[in-house]
Image (tube, rainbow, N blue to C red; front, side, top):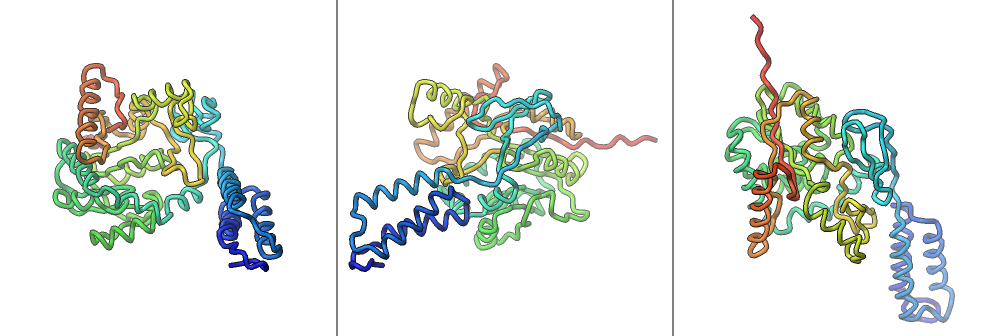
Length: 367
């Protein structure tokens, strides 16, 4: 593209087009959209176009406008876990609220379910599962080893299965295996790479008929969903009696890593300035955040919720959630080892992730 003077205006025009497309798809501020249209007009009608410095300035301006990108949000008036309306805002920067009744921390206001589906359905999100495949192989084998201490064999459902990598290894010990996923891109990869037909959608929306499972796994999923209570209740419904539910969630409120982030923020470390007072990063839809956690659990809050849903707690431990290889893996092995040791001695989880095993109890037979 060139203007009437023959000057190559393609770089700036592309930036302007990018801004207008963003304005259409993500509802950025009207000022940015008007500015983008002005640039297009300016590039096509004047004989003196922007020089390189001005193009760079335009680039920074548009990026700053994209920082103001907003999603359609909803505010919660009740706790997602216990339905109490005794809520208090504890971190305005990160939109964190706490339930005074059960102690649960959650995001409010938060993106709607439709916004979340669009965010996680981006093709680039599925690419993250393909990075460091060897490290993720080791992760799934560590989790399988922990699972085998509780249950080996029977049917298995993995909720939020991604590209099906866990199912690929689990099918050697469990049969049949099934998975759910909301991302179309991940479902396509699971079919192409492993031959799995993954159920599309939330587990609560799928028609399971009379199908029931011996084991259900929720690996780093519950913190992403809008209604964690309904997911847990659905798991109870889908399990056979004496069936096992495995839940893994981030330990963002009590982990040593979060404490370090919060401490570094207080001392003005630039890297952590987008972090709240609890060490939890502030989410943004501008592409700088790889994921969004709607919920922040502690072991106690999750245990109480499971018990209220009818489960019996069999184990509370640490999830060996790391996917590094080589020297970094050795460091994470040590981190997990000392975290496990601290848990055994002090019964306090300061590691990065929580692992809880719950069982659906057998019904008592009355003669």
